Length: 234
Image 1 (cartoon, rainbow, N blue to C red):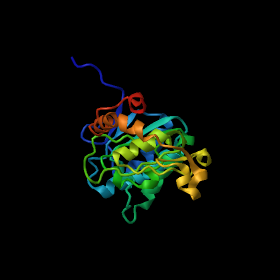
Image 2 (image 1 turned 30 degrees about the vertical axis):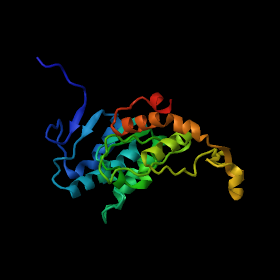
Image 3 (image 1 turned 135 degrees about the vertical axis):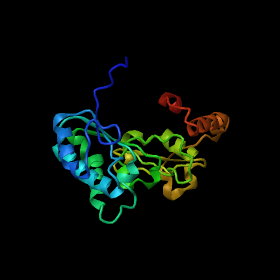
Image 4 (image 1 turned 45 degrees about the vertical axis):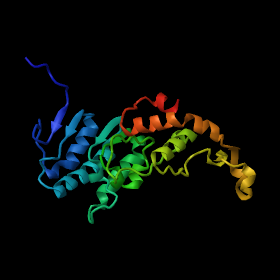
């Protein structure tokens, strides 16, 4: 006899406990927020992308308006709901997702965005993630830039992103930005206009000595074999 499954209600899809239609987005969003339901909302059987967007626009707006308790919201295929280039007429859907990601914490939201194509997720949404973890994305259109706020803007993250070929531009919301320093291989006096912004010179001998370990770490991260944060920053 099979064991009982998890108490998760499935709305929509082939394995639905409760079937849904494209017109039920707002009602379902309000119900999930007010009843604190643990559930899966599957839009795969709604018939068309237009029907799915119609549902998601109403659902995300109602969920944001009604929610007042801690809520983990996992959005699979996030590039469909927050695309870098919104389809004309569906800009409102992007606005609702951006509002949840940008301001949802005050309403209890912890949003999780899942996608295999982060490069086509709208940057105003993607940039709100404090930490972006991208594993086993080998396509040329994979992520080439990452952002963070205060907690993630550390020197080792700048160095690691450079090693992996990512751009890592600082955000203006970094609280101690005015206290940050640049580092150069040459002496700071080599760059007189920038000298007040430069800290110490880089000890290139340390980098050369640790280069094999850095290359090993780079290869492990790209292969998706490193999951322990302490190992990354060691």
